[in-house]
Image (cartoon, rainbow, N blue to C red; front, top):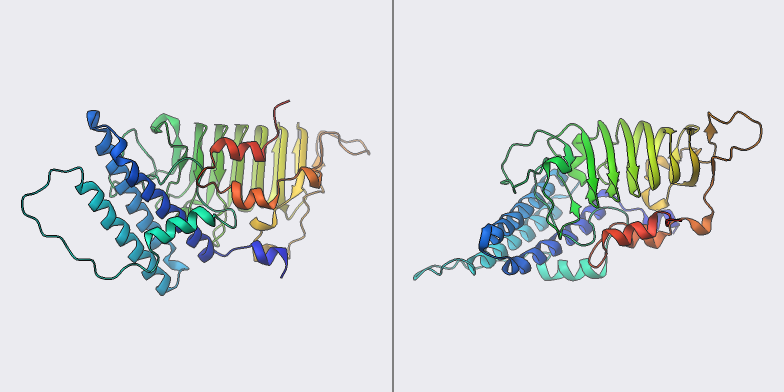
Amino acid sequence: MSTTAMYELGPKERFFRYFQLEVAALQEQMDKIADFSLVGGERADATDHCLAGIARLANEVKDASQYLPAYDQRTYSETIKALSERFQETRATFQPRARFSFRATRKNPPAISLGDAAEIASVQRLQAPSYQSGSSSAQTPSVTIPSTVPSSNEPRDSGDLSDSDHLIPQNVAIRKPSLSESTTVQISNLIDVHIILPSSASAATPSGLLTNLNRCVVDMSVSTATGKPFAGLALKNIRDSLIVCGHVDGPIHITGIENSAIVVACRQFRMHDCKEVDVYLLCASRPIIEDCSDIRFSPLPESYMLKSEQPIENQWDKVDDFKWLKAEHSPNWGILPPEKRITLRVWRDVVPGGAGIALGDILKETIRPKQ
């Protein structure tokens, strides 16, 4: 079996591993509810946050029904039902006990038990870049997360993510917006955040814009791997970050990026005014750089390669520097030596995040150390 066949996972397998991690993360949230103070409504906010996470996961199962077999859908639904029942039991421990009450009997256990999901997630983390981050758990199902936790049925009319309209709890470093009802992806003005776009965000991939990010990890590979790549994508003013762009059917425009790593499969690659950037690239045409320095190129990691892209002639190393017209090789770009490239272990086990893997751990393994 080839390396590509071993490590390339289809949407069903990726969703399965994502689902395992999400269940484990939600259980962890439930276990920590008791640690929040009743003062100021902190415990109520944590409870609502957990409930919204369950609702979001249920919506993502529904969104994934286009490629999930009916049996798998039933399995996931049963697990979510069990998760909801455990949440109700957990919440009941913090509420005044009624003098008389009837307790519903449990019928059939889910095909994937909550315990099994947690155990599998802790031992077998994502086998290909997909979802999840290090130190935090599931997010609310809203597209734009306001300064208070919204209800699961709140209207969603924007695909924008920015610090100006988000409140990030101090112990949370991940956001997984659904974007299932948005028509574009806009991520801006963030520091120290890990963002994962799940498969439900595929409806928002006609265009994308990432601006003003510092020390962030953004993974859009899953949302563009299910047959809906970005039509076009723009990155601007990003520093000390890892951006896994996923798949772009048209051009990607990259401007003002410093000391970062970019992973992308695209038709056209344009880079302007960038320095100290490592690019992991699949490109159907000759990449173009302009006013750049210390740019290193490497082929797209096999774990991000789609089967439909394997026949494409990858021109990742045929770079044209528009500001270097001499016959000799441009000093502004070069080939990233194999021994300095991010390893398969890091792509597979670190970049997706998980228990014990913080945002800083991912950045340490993927971007250049400060000189």
